[in-house]
Image 1 (tube, one colour):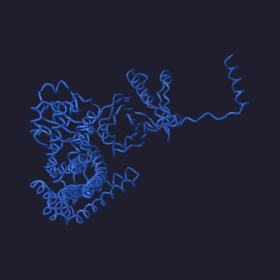
Image 2 (cartoon, helix red, strand yellow):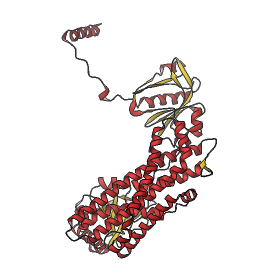
Image 3 (spheres, helix red, strand yellow):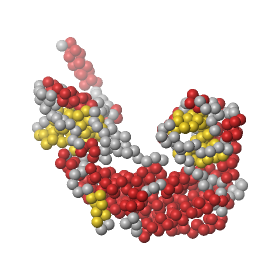
Image 4 (tube, one colour):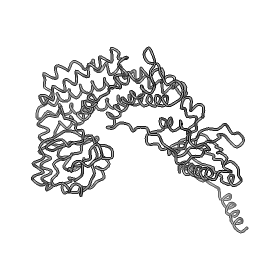
Length: 536
């Protein structure tokens, strides 16, 4: 969800009926007579009705103090639920200035299609209005944090993941089916609590005995995913990592999904536990309030840890399968008793990766689009395969800037032609045959490690091949670029390429040595020599 902070847009509609109160971790509470259309609203299944009513009354009082008209106050009918705030929305909320008195801002709610859908009022986190709303919730505010994640879990369960199910249906082991059953059982508890408005003793007693079973299932898949991540960390050679990923893709996908399912079942159990603690706590029960906060905090910490485990494994697997699907040759991997298309399995892995990213960050990872370099130093242009495979090797938001066909080495010994790629973060050297075979990177220099670039254009004036030498903290790389003697356009691209690489060189101040301490005689001698040089 996005919000445009626009006084004119807000004024276009009199008395906005929807109010958003920003709470921590990128979530907002939505108040109004009905949920705004085009925006995903998450229900607050475990939040007590009395707490929701108290928060609604507080919102009405805050709006009244901000001189909001009576018609708008009558429209604040109830708390509709939680909405996830996109990163760009969070930035806007943190930097915008209140447009009305009382710290209540005016803005426009934008739907999923980017169209301005609703004029709203919103209270930024930390402002007096938002603070008052959270305070009105009392101990139940701890339930908001755990409820936000539970809402996303419930939403993902409802999503259509037919592709993943189709790929995994042949490998669902007894352990996987067991943890799926546990998750469905926990969701039944949430549904019962939603039906009566609280986690009563009767509901809790029906689910309290599952904790040991849930923890065992979680630990099982944690250990499996950790084992994969440790093994990949040990394998330094590209061919060894490729072999492991190809032959263990089935187990990795199964174990990652098993961990996600086990974590979701365990987290849902913790949400029920937190809801029950609140339901049975007395009016001034400080101990129960502290326990509720600890249960919520511990659940979120362990949830984040498990999701990071799964994301690490799924990212590596998705990249490997994505590259494999692009390369010529065999595009299948071992699967149960036969083989499967790498592209098909890659799509299933991407579904799980997106679900993990959404649970962990609130939004799925961006699609890896094919980029075209702005500078090309090659007689025949950029090889068609290179950007398709390279997109899987680039980091998030890493931009492809230039491509060159170059011999790698030093002036006394030049190797055969290689691909050289320049991004805004790295200089990559690719062996042509190995890259075509397995998508591997021969050498990579981070721009932060780049210290000096030698690019002498006098050689070009002498009709000699241009040379670029890159000096980094660990090693240096020399490049001899293609013959430009009869191609003015290529010559211009070479100049742009050299200047681009030079623009990244830097020497941090901490690496510049301090001048040595000189004795008086040496210093005097240097001064005399300097004056003599200036007279000559």
